[in-house]
Length: 166
Image (cartoon, rainbow, N blue to C red):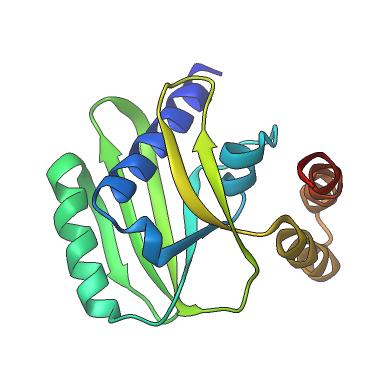
């Protein structure tokens, strides 16, 4: 459990760095970690996933991110892939590594403004997120295609969260 707590602290610290360096306004936080850090989903994920908020120069974004991430972390993998920009980083303060994945295209999502937080740190980070409705819709499609139990768990969570946060 201690490793999961440290991982969550690592994720919030990286989000805070991305916020401080003004990357987050260009990104939309999504994936499994977003509902964990923004809505309290009690299932852990160990990476940070984003979509682009609008079309931007991918090479410039990659170079800037690499520069700023390398000032605070050891980069173990960095690549511009076909569909994504990928970084894997390590920190001397935290066990394990953290993957950051940015989808290179922008998508039409309903965007909401939320606060990423953890009960294990005092940092709170404003982020653009994919709406709960769009996250639920994406999870239904994912469940239909791969039929994994964790997707049903997420669908139930998003359905309840829509009631709590609306």
